[in-house]
Structures are given as C-alpha cells and as structure tokens.
Image (spheres, rainbow, N blue to C red):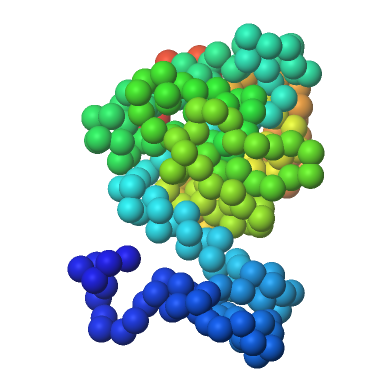
Length: 264
C-alpha cells in the first residue's frame, strides 16, 4: 500500500508491522502477548480463532479474483488419478477423459478470451488428473485458469498449468467448495472417486433445494455414471422426484458439452 491508495489518514497495518519489528529487544517486547494480533501466527492458529480463519479463507480468494476481474467460471471436477496420455496412472481405463477435459477447457477458454478472460474462466481443484487436464487446456488456448487446491496428507500440490496468481490453497473443504460455486455458470463432472462424488452431490443438492440457481450440470460418460448410480431406483423408491433427473445431462465429447452450455 502507498499513500495514494490509502482511503483514510491513519497509519496502516503494513507500516506498523514493520515498525514493531524494529522495537528494542526487551523481556516485554519478546513476550508473545506483545505481538500485534494480526501478525502473530501462534495467535491466529489458536482453536478459538477458527471463525476468523474461516472468514479469511473465504475472503482472500474472493478479493484476488475480484481484483483479477473474474466474473464467472466453468467448473471442471474429476479424479486426480486419471492419467495424462504421457504417463501411466491408476485409472488407465478412463484415460480418454483426460484428453476430453483438456479439449473442453481449451474450447471454454477460447470463448473466455472474447470477454478478456473475465467470463467463462476454467476453475478446477488445481491438482493432478482431470484437474490438470482442465488447467492445461486453458493454457493451450493462451488463457488463465483457477486452481482451488487443498492441503492433504498424501496428494496434492498444484499442477504446473494453474495460473500462479489464481492458484489458491485451502484448509477448509467447505470454503473451497463455496469458491467452486460462487461464480459458476456451468459444472462439468468427469469420472471420479469419493472427492468427486462429494462435490457432485453437494452441487446437485444445492440446485435441487433451490439454494443455488439452476445452471448447466453435465456428467461425462453416461455408461460410467449409470453403472455407478442407479438414478431411476432413487425415483422408484420415492427418494427423489422424476423431475430431479432433469437437473443434469450426459455428454461424451467436449463439443457436446459446449453445445449444452450454449443452450442456457
């Protein structure tokens, strides 16, 4: 922050943080209680500060995306285990979906460039597999893309194709999922495991219950999804309504999905 960007006459927090670091070394200034609260990691990580951390995790990506001018996104979700054609992976039987996701992201980003990258911005979980394919496709088109990563004990680091200053890291799954949906104008779900299913059903529930407006919701690979989930049995047992089956559509190719998104 400089004097021109400030909207008030008071000293700002950056100035005082720097000044506090130059205080004389005494028993008092070395005590944790003396640290500025907002510059004290030990304080911010206390259990009592969870509400503040939730707010910060919601606010930081929001402000950065606003500053970058991101108005709307297309969300690509799918397994981290589906490999690119260049390297082996665990879900090799589903490997064709990597190329499909990459092509879809390229087509979406080409459309996004007409709005100077403000609308139709590809957003993924930022990790490997289908997420990587989405960010990579956006890069193929010469555009930027968003990666919403999360700290996990065994996976995940951001893939190399996420736009660096739109690459975010989360502690809270719930806040991460909010950012997936806050700007979404379409959701594309590729085959995946527990994480993909969790995200898919939360999105469907929000739309079904009217907590989120209806947007194009596309499942890639009808054979995969109908083998995995007996949607009709949910209707037959009275657990969902017949109309709920219309909340999503199936696509097999990137071009089909683009046509579906263009209809809305």
